[in-house]
Image (cartoon, one colour):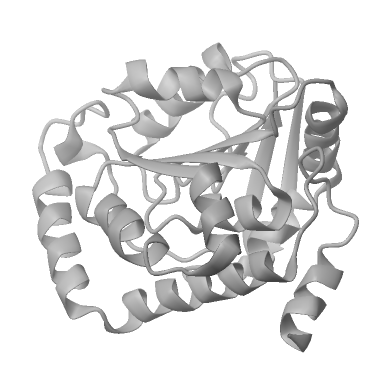
Length: 259
């Protein structure tokens, strides 16, 4: 209980959904979810084998570089964004300002998030449990979405888990070729989180253009690499967040684009 209260204390002052009161059971579920994800990453051999088999089929090297076709998306490498790192991004003043405007702007709907390349779901689950935000995750790999829905989230117990299931959903989709499913979620999102650290440059550019065309004014795009459209499109602001710890770079610079 002390650990959960300490976590709650660290997040005090963050913008939450209107009427959301974080409870001990939410932080219990957050910890349980995170532990289960780490167990899967470290020791679930069946998932690892399924993931790599599917990834080889999707991301096998191709002579033709076409970002809309799965063999050349430039994905498939596993990377971890740690819990404190995600909260550093959400705690940035620009992101907090955007979320505050949404949370206080009238209406009962909480701020909405979209995660592109959701893997096992942490970039969606953590802010949902901590702040009461709705979140949708898309991943091209069915193995990741199935593991997230049918194992990790299904294994959680208690009221916190029930609240989580009301807030998050994960779907199999190629962000670019399934734009008819992704774009409506982008239109409603306050934050679009793009796990682009292993995507090809052409895919990254298309995603930035897609996000700009569909996100509402005042919303935010989160990137793991320098933006490619900052000069081409009329983003209102571009911000760097240095020294973000990830599994592949302990001092990564992440980027925010405000529309």
